[in-house]
Length: 161
Image (cartoon, rainbow, N blue to C red; front, side, top):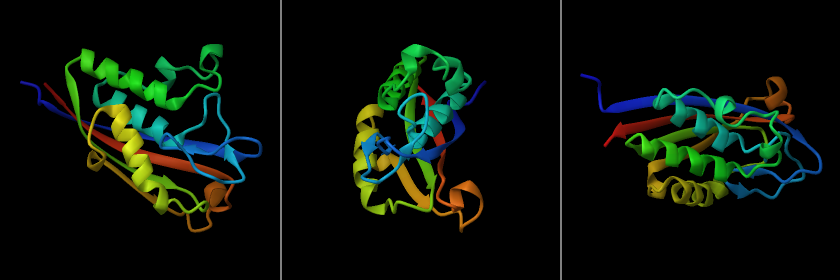
């Protein structure tokens, strides 16, 4: 018999660019740069989407929300995550928890964790304390370490209901 508990992982990375709002975890983070992307570029939500889809063995974000499709241009990633939550519910999966890490040199994000947890909890229909968020630097290494990009990783635990 298959286990009722399933786990998935997700990863995303986007380049920082001028003239874009920085959206991470479904909230606006005041900063002079934003994330380049076909949608709003929210690396944290994109990683969470991949983690949830992976846990349910449904594939990845690109299958459901292709970057080349005009209808997803400048899409609100929060709306995409809400759709994934709906699909999980239709398949009788409930979200147990999310754990995530944002990898960036700047801006500093710790003061934004509570707002991100509240927003993601709202979207996912879970308590904010079921959404773990932390940030790490890349210690000056690579594009992230130079401050040219931001990445995120996420792990999702779901259970069949």
